[in-house]
View 1: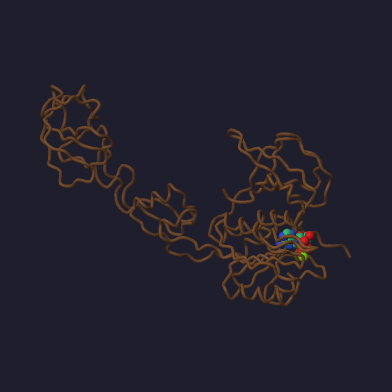
View 2: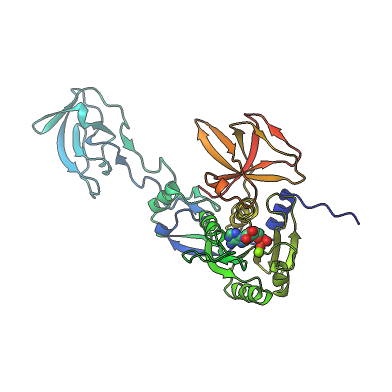
Length: 402
Ligand code: AMP
Ligand code: MG
């Protein structure tokens, strides 16, 4: 019987995205909102600036003066209220941010004013409206300011703060349980016994989850045992995990329990096998709103599967739209054997002026984590391609968000 062709990476990603409902929201203290996803539209609550204010230190002037002199009648510091109205020919000493007093229509900067007892003389006529930030000139009450799906960076947090918002409605951080399966795995900090390797995938995945806005829960190492893995999946469901990542055991060998354990816990498998190298046995399943990924144990497969499927899934869970593919320019020529799979290889991306340049790192395969020591992206080389000249366009996916 002819084998069914494997689904492509983009078909697999489509299937993942079709099964995602965004996580619920929480009202979060504004000081905790950095990098969170806004889930409410924010309108400007009052005219901005809220009152006419001076942009500079100097003198607020009442109209023009034929001899360029004004009598100083008051002093207005930032934050002062109820300033005294000015009459024609009068001025007020004024400091940046202070309200423009009634009657004043322009501000002369102090560098252009010569003080003569209780008067000032401006060195040249000052145009009406000079150095005044007028009420509402930046935005009017009721206008749209920030919209849903905005990632809250410093500027957006500043905008919300300028409206007096002490809290914002944001996406909860998706809770991601990480199960690392394998009888050969040792916990960090313990001496290696013969036949053991350290569980590098757990911390590696946790860092990727954090960078994408998720909240990792590291369960640690599980034996290759159906009952043990099943128990932990059930525990993850009880704890309302949004995503369960099961590392290792994703294939169909005698010691591979990811699929049977998920099915025994009521999960429906939507795909198991993708035209992808490394990462072919990748599995995706859901139980209600909970997503599960079976990730082949090799560390480079983990890097690729996270970048290709789990990072986009976390975005969608937080109610962000999908990203367009990224493309960079190849920095040095690449040569390799033909492959039947779509390859995603560890690579180093750097900014060179306005260009993004990518170098594919020499690697011995999906177990070669040392080859990834410089990696910050996975680069796509389609299976039939055997060589790429410098300056070729190469698609890539980041290992983590900036
Ligand atoms: P598996 O997918 O379970 O067949 O594992 C494939 C390869 O990845 C094996 O060489 C494992 O020893 C290795 N591996 C599995 N889990 C981990 C892990 N958590 N950290 C590092 N290597 C792992
Ligand atoms: Mg294993």
